[in-house]
Each structure stands twice: as structure tokens, then as C-alpha cells.
Length: 142
Image 1: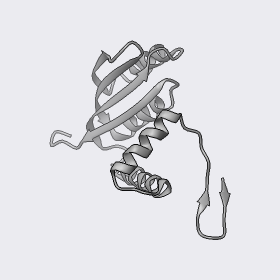
Image 2: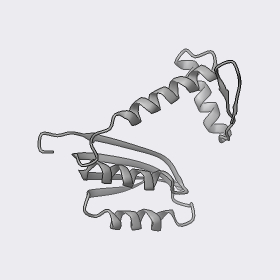
Image 3: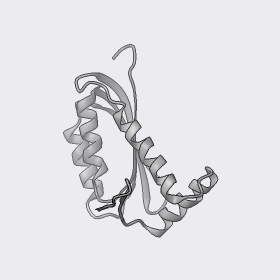
Image 4: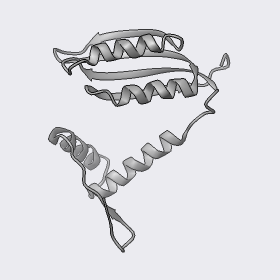
């Protein structure tokens, strides 16, 4: 990462070519003519989404959608281990075979926000996880 005197920071990072092509196509459809502006908007959205936090001890109901490459070494065992470790907050899980290589796991959770976010962080960094989305509700029961 390098800093310039003009009030911007130039960075570089690696992306699979297909992901970059999809990003550029999506940004173009959204009206962006400048990739940097599209990335800035995406980063702002990510920051806003992550900032919408509850107190660590708030009780929530949520779901995790995990799209992963089941051919990645050890991914199935790692997911199973994390599920067993988090049995107290997992109420249900569903495993769906999307195609020959990809699987979707849907995990329904109910528990303390801090514990659920901790599970999300553990899953997010597993090799083979392609996409992960946490959605949660603050219900009347919670």
C-alpha cells in the first residue's frame, strides 16, 4: 500500500479474472464509468453494513448462507467441526449440492450477537469458502 500527497491511497490486490470481469460488468450496469469509483462505493457499502452492529450480548436470530467449493482440501471437515463447536447457537442447517463442485450450506442461528459474529469470522476465512452472507433479525422474542 502506498500513500500519495493528493489525498488518495493507491493499492493493489489480486482477483480471479472472472470475478473482476463480473465486477466490471455489474459496475457498468449500475452506471459506473470508473472502476475506482465503483470500488469506493462497494467499500462504503461494506463498511456501512459491518457498522450495523448490535451489542455483543444482544440475542438475535439469523442465518448464514455459505457457498463453498467442496473440493477444497478439508473444507467439509472444517465446516462440520465449526458446527459441532457452535451447537449451542445453531438451530438447524441444510446442505445443498449446487453442482459437481459447489455446495450451499444454510445455517440457522439463535444466540448472542457476539457468538454469531465470531462463527461468521471463523467461516469467512476457511479455504474453499467462496461467498458468505449473514442476515439477522432482532425479533420480538429476542
